[in-house]
Length: 319
Length: 319
Image (cartoon, rainbow over all chains, first blue to last red; front, side, top):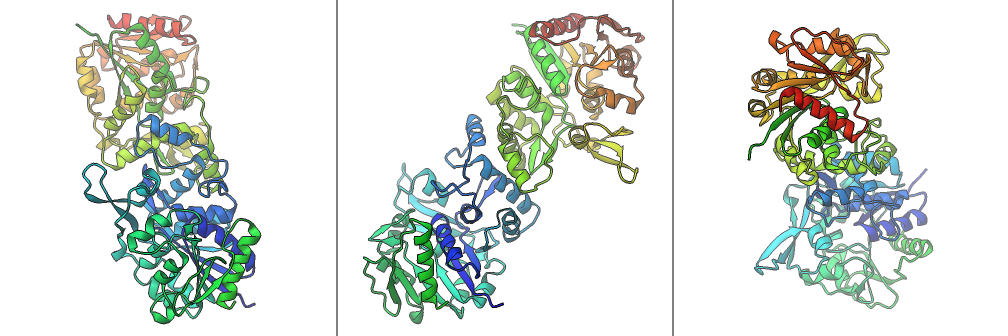
């Protein structure tokens, strides 16, 4: 039997929803997801991998659909108790159900298992129907350079602190991948690109999700070495983010908040960039030299719409 | 102002209840509790100190009164989630509220704080009205030697596994304090004995609570060097344990399950033992040579009865 192999680069909520569409559009395909781990953080001694968990819960049927992250039917007892002890930080959404995942992950990491093995073990329960690969087994954490509210001096804070605690309010001047120099692509990542029939860039944040994955030494080269066509899906529709806060991230890199801006940032594969094809919304104009720009409905507001979008992406990839 | 200083040796539930009586009987006194940490265990990467927490929650108003351990209004979400991952062990009662305590303790221990400092930090929230001292900052764990159900061969298992998972069913042939050779009395323990006006042995398990504390090198000598009278309260009433499973532990040491048996095990201070006074129930006979044996109601079935028992113990100590 000849399977089609699809590789998707993804962050959290948007990427996870897109993946449901890919799974629906290509039920017989092998789907491998290279997931951003730059949002990972250690809190209260627990190692938390927001994007890996969001993808795992979403595809495994455990996600809170309304919020787009964390577990359905979640309770917050431990969080309230930690607050009663005045234990910092209190601003992170640490749910009781979710916490069991972090406990197991932390224990396995402490025992010496790499994150990729931990991810496989956790996915045993959730059966997401895709192969989940952390972008790297090494710890790479996105920090955000923002002005200190008191002194005005630039300082780097963890992405989660900027994103969750500060609601991405202070203008970032830069994003730093702490630990990236010592990072390698996670086990299976470069092999997946080499064996891929299609590579899709999910409509995730181009800076702190897709950009972070591509920042791991070796991943960009492996991606460009893939025999598959590379198809990107714009996270920007009508000049605005569909969800998330990419509009707070793009300007720090001098990228215009538009489908065209992000497309040009990714660039044409024929010209040293990434894209063979760039999918933008029907009403969006995008002139990206050397890239096959296609207009398709991008809003993932129903399972059918999401599967149609994925189908369009796979069509563009020729599979 | 001249305070009376009372030092109590205690295990979990019975000791904690007795301490409420001591606090009620001597509201102006300084009360220091030396708590057994031999039941401590690491599960799911969390450091759990059952006796310290039981005393802290009981005196701080957070205990589940019915069970006698864990938090009132407890929920079990994390435990159920861990079981859904097939994460061992599943038999330990790890409550959501309780778990926050373990998270903070584990994080502080990992950061290098000794257990005594962690205990003080946690007690900041609970304000138990007593000074809580772990018997030792070193890790000392009680293991129980029991026959393997399959091979019949003797093997040592953690106390919690015997107590909770096996409901103390297999007959123990011995109790082993793993790590005790390298243990020192916790900070403040020997000083507390030296400054005490009364030393009370709570009606806790004589083997795995009081016995474990006394097994820490230096504690027995410090206790015997105290200028205070030492008053013990029998955990055995009418030949049976009031609560807990001391009757499963005493035979392993050849101790008769009776007030007299335990009294003789502790022994007369004048004869190299511990006791100046031994409190037994009104209907119990106990002939312990060299010890002032007194008959007083021992059942702690109301706050008044508990305070009266504590008052009788303090009277016997001469304070």
